Image (cartoon, rainbow, N blue to C red; front, side):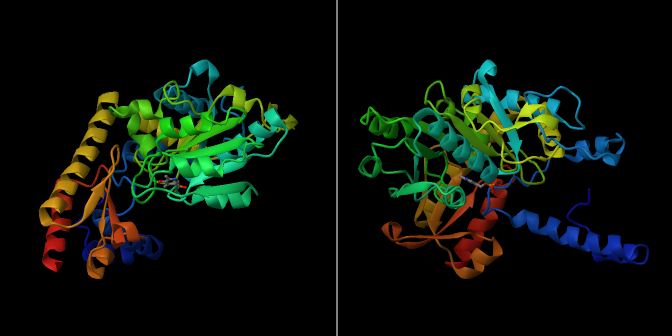
Length: 400
Ligand SMILES: *Cc1c(COP(=O)(O)O)cnc(C)c1O
C-alpha cells in the first residue's frame, strides 16, 4: 500500500507507462490523503483487508464469479457461492446479540439500510401472518431516515414519534400514538445518527405493555453501535435475552474495517418461517429475503476480519473509541464550547464551528433549537486518535 508520501513524481513516472493506471493512481492518492481528515462520518478508515487481497489474487477466486443467491442456512454446497462462510459470519454475530444458534436466521446485507429494509418487511409480514391485519410502524424522528424512506417504499402506515433533547423516543408520545386495534411494528434506534441517542427500550416496552391486546414486533436499528456495544459493559442493551427484540440490523462497514458497504441482518427462525412463502424451485428453497443475487465477496471479507480479530481486540477498540469520545467531550468543556455525549455513544455533538472548519473536516450539519441552534458532530471511530482530535481542537481554538 502507498503511504501518505505518494508524490507527483511517482504519478508522472506511471503516466508514461499506462494512462489508465496513472489516472487511477492520481485519484487513489487524493482519496487516501483525504482519509486522514475523515472524522465526521462513522466509517472506520483502518481497512484491515490487505491480507485478504493478497490471498484473493493468488486464489483462483479472483477469476471466478460467485454469487450468494440463496439461503445461508439451507446451503447444500451446490451453488457457486460463499454461503457456507456467510453462515459462519451470522453464527459469529448471533450469540453476541443473545440469539440461540438453534433459532437463528439472517443474511449478510448490502448495507444498514438493506438490513432495516428486511427488518421492516419481515416485521410487517410476520405481524400480518399472526393477526391478519396490517401493522402500524412506530419510529422516532431522531432515528436514521432510512426507516422513513423504507416505510414509504413498503407503503407502511407510519407514526413518527417525537424525540427528546438526547435523541430518544419520548415514551408518553409513543403511548399517545398507539393504535390499539392494529399490530405494532416498532423500530428502536440504538444510536441515532446525529446525537447517538439510544431509545430506552425498557421504558418504551413498559408503555407497549400497557396495551395488552397489542401484538408487537421489535426491530433494532443498530447500524453503528451494534458493531461495538456487544464488546462493552453495555452489552445487555443489545442482548435479546435481556431486552426482547425480533430482529436487528447493523452495518458491516462502520466498525469492522470493511472497504465497501455491507451489513448484517439477524432474526429468529420463527420470524423467518412466518413470511410470504415464495418457494423458488431452481434454488430449492423458500426465499424470504428481498434480493435474489447477493454479494459473495463481502461475507468473505467480514469472515476474514473476524478470523483475524480476537475478542480482546474488539473490546480494546470499543473501549478506546468510547474513552476518546469522553476525552473529546472533556476538551470541549474546558474550551467552554457547548458539547454533548450520550451514554454508550462514540458521537460527540456540539455547537457548529465556523464554516472553514466544517468544510475542512467534512462535518455533517444538524439543528436543534432546544440546544441553541446549529450543531455538528464528530464520530470517534478507530482511526480517530487523540492526536487527530487535538489537531481539530487546535483549529477550533484558532478560529474561535
Ligand atoms: C449509517 C446508519 C444507517 C444506514 O446504514 P447504511 O449502511 O449507510 O445504509 C442506518 N441507521 C443508522 C442508525 C446509521 O447510523
